[in-house]
Image (cartoon, rainbow, N blue to C red):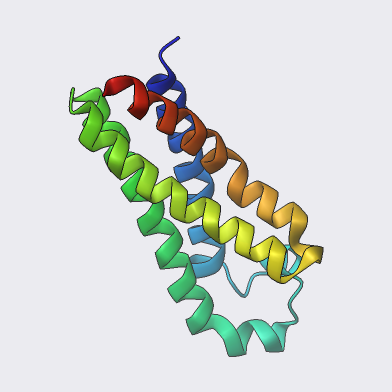
Length: 132
C-alpha cells in the first residue's frame, strides 16, 4: 500500500480528533461532561472559557490544515500536499509531546492528541522521501 494513503488516513483521523477537541474547548467548555474530561470545576471553566475557546480554534485550524494536505494529495499535488500534511500533523505531534513532557499526568490526553499525527508524520516522511 502507498504510504501516502496511510498518511492521508491518519491525518484525516487526526483532523477528526482535533475537530472534537474544538467542540469540547469552544462549544461545550462549561458542560459537566467536558469539565470531567478536563478536570475543571464550574468556576475554573467559567474563568478559562475564553482561553479554552482560543485553544479550540487552534485545534480546529490544525485539523483543517491537515485536511487541506489530504485534499491536495488526492488532487495529485503529492509533494505540496505532503508538505502541508506534515506541517499540520507535525505541529499536532509536537503539541502532544509538549503536553506529556510538561505534565506526566497528561499521558493519556497526549496519546489521544498525538497518536494519529505520529502515524501521519512517520508515513508522510517516508512517502515524501519516495516521491523525490
